[in-house]
Image (cartoon, rainbow, N blue to C red; front, top):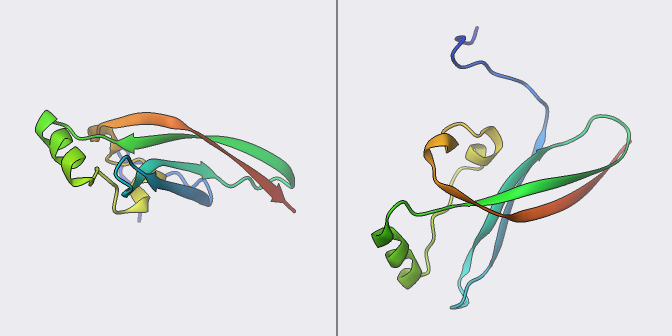
Amino acid sequence: PPQSPSHPRVLAGPQIVLSVYGPDFFGHDVVRGYGAVHVPFVPGRHKRTIAMFVPESTSRLQQLTSWFTGRRPEFTDPRVVAQGEGREVTRVRSQGFVTVSFNVI
């Protein structure tokens, strides 16, 4: 079906979506960052640097509650990371970089 002009769909090929977890101060596994990168199609060795980000609580009360409970905001659907749709209304914080290498034949 044709897409409406306000929501064009761009097919850009497969992606790798990263969800990185690690321990917090209390030893709970918490999200350290999300990121996505398109897999290159051209044969050869390719290196990509992925900017990672984490969702943030929108209020001080939510921040305090998540600190006490050890539960921080997380995305439940990896499509949010891959597509980016809906992320414009989500508060996120930059959280470093991950470098990946692809060997395409």
